[in-house]
Length: 125
Image 1 (spheres, one colour):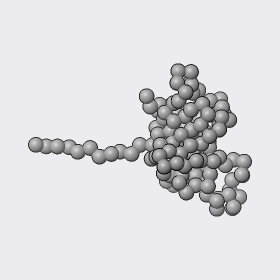
Image 2 (image 1 turned 180 degrees about the vertical axis):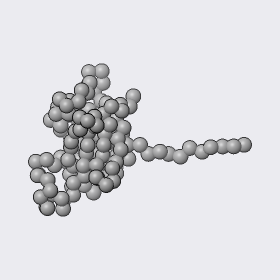
Image 3 (image 1 turned 30 degrees about the horizontal axis):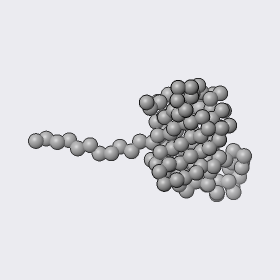
């Protein structure tokens, strides 16, 4: 008998609510040692980017304190809270919260850039 076994393929998932962004464990693992994060959007890529920022980055003056957002890390998820972040995002990319108060998206970590890319055109049902 020929059996093909399936291994786990860890997939990062970001859930965008009307007042926060929640990351699953796979996505959160990349931010466990982060002091904070930068949040950005690319219209060309139709993606939201979360960049890990260390205390050293801030001390060197690479980023301004006002640009840094807090991420709360829990054992099974990470959360970025802020209605203003979601409002800004929905001005740049249409996200519909009318049918449901949440939208799930695939995401991928870029090791070189220390950036999590949330693919806004890859909504998960």
